[in-house]
Image (cartoon, rainbow, N blue to C red):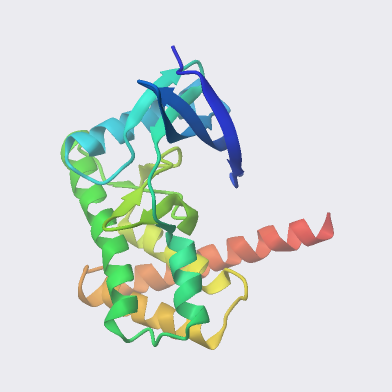
Length: 220
């Protein structure tokens, strides 16, 4: 049974209803995240990956409770990956500096763990699928969440989507973002062994998708 809760803030989500909530435990108020899914299938997939990754010591939020199409998740203090990137650009921190490279390495290391564990367990190459920077939180570690779009694929597909997101968060295509994207791609290729041509093809593919989506949105 879902713990009695009070909704205090709604988070941005295109697919589901997601809230910051408070609940009482042993007379003490605690904070959590309530995720109300659009389908049972999506909820079941989220639970599967959260439990699988947590069992293998990959940083994901803990499931506190569940009921019907809802999951109550551990609240993680920290910054969204998107907030961290915005902050670095606003401060004009050179993407070549370790402060920026460390963020990229944290993200790619987390994804590398995801790829290894899912392939070992499922015996097929899986990708995260939705690498929106709002699906990662950084504090002392990097945590990932939102596994509804996980599917078979290659790391370069996730990598291309990451680069496309980086370039197109507002303001789009700034000189900082373009340099940061170059640094990120170099790390992917040189340190994480992404295949260059496949990565560049995936980046262009996702840039076209984002451009088309925004064009449709503007017409409405």
